[in-house]
Amino acid sequence: MNFLSPNGLLSPDQVSGQTINLWRTDPRHVAGQGDQTGSGAGSQNFGQMLLDGLNEVNTLQQEHSKLAVQAVLDPKSVNVHDVTIAEAKANMALSIAKNVVDRVIQAYQTIINIH
Image 1 (cartoon, one colour):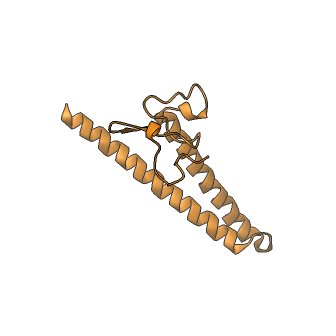
Image 2 (cartoon, helix red, strand yellow):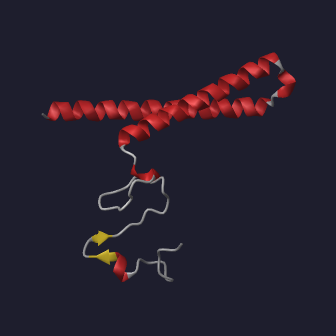
Image 3 (cartoon, helix red, strand yellow):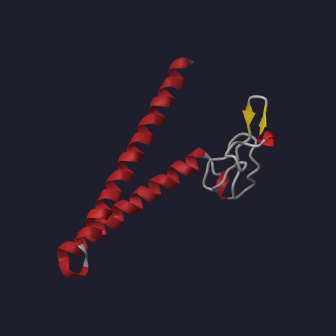
């Protein structure tokens, strides 16, 4: 699905004044103001998205732990690269989750200080 005209520019019906109409091309994108999402997967609130992300981090941590234990108990059944990749994914996910939580706390404190 191409939203650009053949010359690579937005078409005139996509632009009105200083407003550009954007489309959600992926249902996982967060719905913006005026989006008609209904009750599908894209209509989650921020809290639910945060909990889903934390559950995903937990799943990655558990997968890494399971592979690491399996590598110690039966080294021939697990590829070392798989353990290393699982560790990197788990560490990256945890780091991103920590940063998101820190930013949420920082935003909350900023809002509290404004009032």
